[in-house]
Image (cartoon, rainbow, N blue to C red; front, top):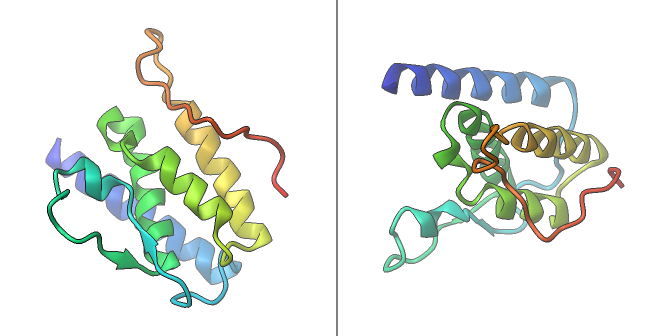
Length: 128
């Protein structure tokens, strides 16, 4: 399990890095700070939430979306992170297209039991 998770993380990092080489997924990285929604989920409530640049929010969210297909526990905080990415000033048109792909990926985690589903109150419509 540990090896599979590490390999999947590495694959997702490499894939996102390759995407960033050929297109602009975000602009003005570091101009605004963001929070990682899963910090709360890891029992770090007593600690000060770490402010991170958009690039880290995007990369960690992209990793977790891929890992959630392997283990649904990684979905914790992902819908909130996707909402933060969508509302962020840094997201470009291509970034919004990647966001739509990630939303489709997490919707693919619905198992036959329906317990792995990931829903938020946000309407998911066409990319702006």
